Image 1 (tube, rainbow, N blue to C red):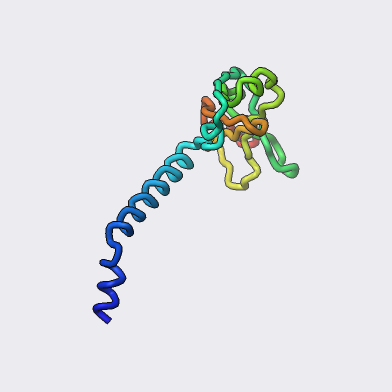
Image 2 (spheres, rainbow, N blue to C red):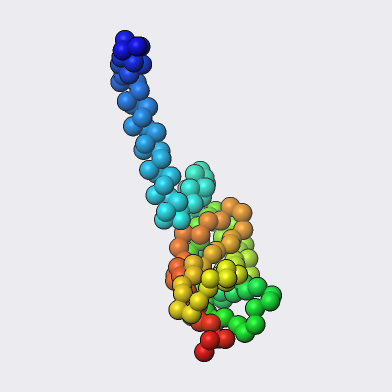
Length: 142
């Protein structure tokens, strides 16, 4: 049993170590990209990419239909930085970009913060949204 385990670990040791290091590097890269909300799709394109900034885009609030009283958010607008192909960015209109805050979760309370979700057309990635979160003000409690 011991020779079998030694053979399992020591045979092609450097190749196994290199494979483990490469797999760890890939995993950390993907983990950081997900954590920072970075889209790797736009950066893989071979075409030159540009960035464009849209200011004061309205944030849409999604609430359940049966909710009595409303919830509002503060602030009501955001600034979005988008990245993509130059031609696609030239044809992009403000109406093509949607900012959404989902308040359909029953646990939304006063003074809670919710993340702003950005939807852009295919081939265009959002780089940054400012602010990333908005404050929820429940008007039924005020």
